[in-house]
Image 1 (cartoon, rainbow, N blue to C red):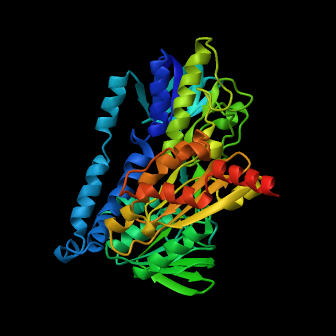
Image 2: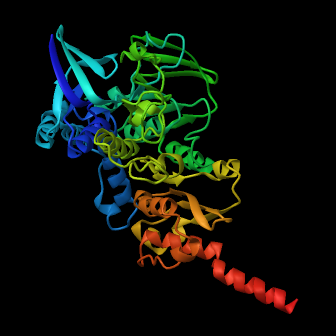
Length: 484
């Protein structure tokens, strides 16, 4: 048995773990990552990158078909083998050689194997029957992410369902695919597989994309149906049976048969086999943290990314990781900690400004609060909606552009607290909305942020015009009072 002594141990070598380690090393701490699978994690090989590589060809084809002149030049359908070949390239053919090379260049150590906490500030790593015990002088950061959640449905295990991993790494597209679930993974995979020629059915217990504004799910359902996807909302799944011909799914609305079935009903924390019980924590649960990503009651233990359940998005996990790596280094060196809201060492944005893009057709981009969430928080708000098709930049991009923009304004403080965009190519609108929310830019000042013409960003001007200039309203009110 080997023994190592380092400053920081990071369990999990995905994008989150890599960022924690990188910031800790930049802060002068000797750091190792423990990884049992591929360095680069879920996002690189089974989630963000391969899924978007599967989605992009269909998006490009639909964009060309929506522009006369280009549409006439597009006479075929997607070349599925080429789509899969390009997907393989983005997943680096499931080799982490490049990622390991980056770790070496960044000065980050790597120990391969299953890492389990075996005591305070101690991790035991096992691989091929051998064990390495690593003692951390300062901190252990858990960045093991999340796994697909498996609902309790009779026959599920025997039906050998796909998770998102199988859906994004398959080397052949099945003739038909049933998807159980109505969230981001379900709708994105339905979009991709439909464009690749599969006969797709979505079985959702509620409506689609329920965490977003209600009109979002309605628009995506309408679009999926128009592309041939059968969308069954408000439908429960009773039982699954694997047969020689595929999977038979009994639902509350009848029977669905498909070659394969994908379970996309949510995510669960990857904490079931980390040795948490050795330090008094419960395996299989999300690890709650403070805003510096430290687990309360453990001055040496941090939980970063999906594993803490704060915001299950790669970019948000990397944001947390930068804060965590920096604060671990600062605490180790006895430096001043900036842990008030929006400070250097906290992940304040997790609470109020989490940006998200759903790469369906139409595309969805959202950040901040929905109207219902803002009202539930006790805010006085105005909800502003505008047809994106009326914006010159949008209508120029394709004929019959169909989209909606929604802005939520806190009228008491005169700032934007939420924004949702639905339509082709709206992802690039999101960062401006995120900036406005995080910086709490007053509406009066946003009037001076001039969008270039003709671009889709002109939607900001149209929303502001609908809201009205606050200063102008104040002057009008004073004049009214004078005349009265």
